[in-house]
Amino acid sequence: MFAVCTEPDWDDTEAIGRSGELPPLSTSTMRYEYASARCNGGEFVSVSFPGSASCTQWNLSVQRNTAPAWVAFADCMRRHGYFFLESGGGTYNCRTIAGSSEWSLHAFGLALDLNPSKNPVGSTNTDQPEAMRSDIKAIVAGNRHVFVWGGDWSGNDKDTMHWQIGATKADFAGGVVDPNLTAEELAESMEREPEIWADNTARLWGAGVEH
Ligand SMILES: [Zn+2]
Image (tube, rainbow, N blue to C red):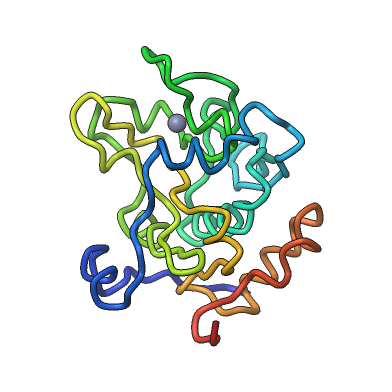
């Protein structure tokens, strides 16, 4: 199967207003919602992300409920030809935010860093195609847009390598929808992830399917 990603014909604000979809939630809400996952490997499963050179597949740990959205995220990377180029970055890391005593969402398996050398913190520089970022932001769980991009934060918080989850477990119980994929295409992607496939078959839908 091969799917061509196209940029959605709306900006995020328009979509939220027009369709009743909700924006992602804050970092502090995520810390509360996923408190039991903090530095707790028992809540994590592995999702495969595309790499280049010596590592063509990176198996990274994410919080279990959010795994279908990361599968859709990784699928979007593949469709746009975007790969991990280096060993830096990744998902799970039991740590606080640099220069802060607040827990990073990496400690909960709720965040991913893409190619730090190309997407340095505090800079507007990024090697991520705009169309890929739009497609990632279009992924929905239940009625809510899932992903927050650190490149949309301002000033010293700007962090273009960083993506994090902004949807609750209740949102994920409503199923993950990638409007750029059919149900069959998303199911095929899930089949690459045997660890989570069985748990999540009932919680995945593609575009054009009633839900
Ligand atoms: Zn990060």
